[in-house]
Image 1 (cartoon, rainbow, N blue to C red):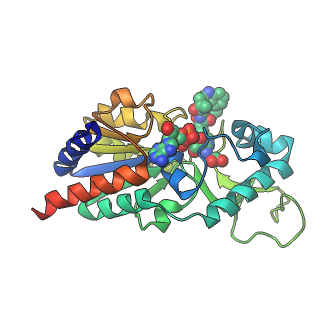
Image 2: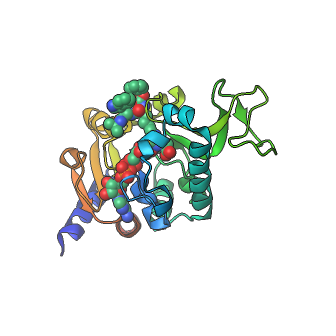
Image 3: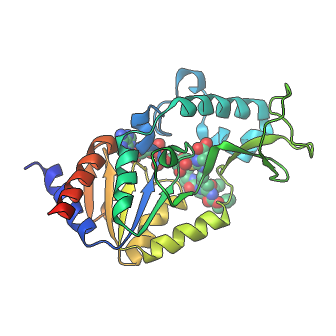
Length: 251
Ligand code: BV8
């Protein structure tokens, strides 16, 4: 039996005694849907730009049209992407627990498309818009040639996502901390564990006494806190984990 097999059996055991589960995901779970992670070299078009600058209010103020076009480009790519077996495995696992929350740093809406419920989007959603100055929600983009388009209040429209240097939505933080402080098992999937406050979520769960299972092809700062480390791509590891877990439920 390989090390990964042994670790998956260890994770199945932890899920077998779980009552309250939090799954926390980052860009890695969408990699197998064809969406590059932040660590990946950006496609040639954006190779000369730093995502941390583009994904910031300063970057938007400096060149609103450039940032708008970056998000339009990403929105088109994300819109064409489909959930992968990793997203579907999490949606399937949710069926076995009354208390199961998915906290995602991703803005790609793929957990919802895969059928997950109880999703907390801590960094927003690339398919939602608001205006920059007043945060007016924008249901329908105006049909004008402005790049970026303008809100009826005159402010520029931006994607409703959390940029670097911006606070996370209070409601998303409250829901995240409430679920982390009551969970007994946390699955951390496809995140480099670098961007805060999301990078601190596993430590909150650990302090609350939870077991932490990490899924990632590489070790991260979270790995040393994890009780089980499943070294591999989410799209391959999660379906095996959920299948083995379901076998224990049918015995
Ligand atoms: C905040 C939405 C309070 C937008 C994102 C100095 C000045 C200002 C702020 C700071 C500062 N120093 C620190 C900060 C705080 C800052 C921060 O943490 N910076 C880091 C860089 C040190 N955080 C913030 O600014 C946050 N707000 O703190 O407010 C505040 C306010 C003012 C001043 C101080 C504090 C807001 C952060 C949110 C930014 N928005 N996204 C958009 O998407 O366009 S962040 C974005 O990057 C993602 O959402 C995600 O959070 C992060 C990328 O991380 P990952 O998701 O982990 O992806 P990554 O590419 O890094 O890693 C992929 C992983 O997948 C890897 O581990 C890889 O091995 C793995 N993988 C690859 N393939 C697979 C796989 N895993 C599984 N399966 C596979 N197949």
